Image (cartoon, rainbow over all chains, first blue to last red; front, side):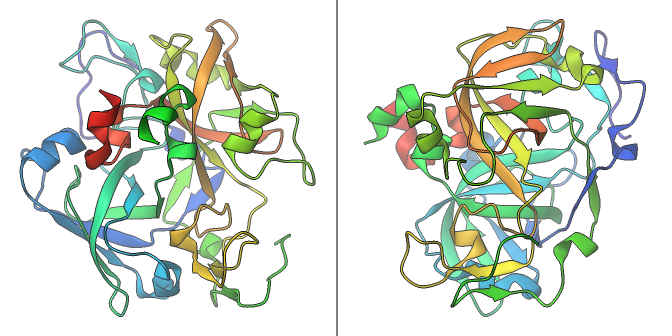
Length: 164
Length: 164
């Protein structure tokens, strides 16, 4: 548990990691220029940095890339393996007062999954290298899933018409 | 492994469920009118049905709801516990020829996580009941996470201006 608890924050009286009910496997690693101390706090800031990133897929899963093409928007699901799982009220620097973990996008949460929508800029199906425009995680962060971004699933219904 | 393999489909020679590298805990259950046979294939069809749904949060996590208000768009992450984890090429009925699992939104994937963006229509912080507009999963599907939908993270950069 690397990150300290700030004033107003609250932890659970158990570690959700001790209550595993399903197992995740890692399908690859995300390669980035970032480590603790210089990692952008969100994907907008990662994009602003001008630094691209790439994915190294586990070669067992190469067939799963069939049909993916550069230019597609993808949702990445990655596992923030250095975040806390027991923080349930949090006081991030940019908000006033503590917020519930499920009301913010902090990587600290019972299941330390992160989600970002990225642009696939290149793909090598033979090696499983996927180039992406940017990402906001440490180098070697485990990748759990990737899938096409689809407005009918991934945009609130009231906003879908604006994207038509 | 409930679902049969169709012509052109391919399975891995291992079950990703046997290679767990991180553990998920369930933070609640999604209550829906759906079971095998009548479940909408995606959230657009679930919305078209006119049937709402709700979440029953595990009461251990109630503090995590602090700050959530009706009207917000939320991303739900849920665990499709009856899907296959070993299908790597798939032939869904609506596409021609097999596609890689990571090029489609099928619930059958190495980590059987599903994602949908829903609208929070009601919240009871005392019981942990969250009402939502619709969802495309069986009754009692385990919930893994919920978080606010944010266009800067969840919309491809080229489309963000259209939502401004």
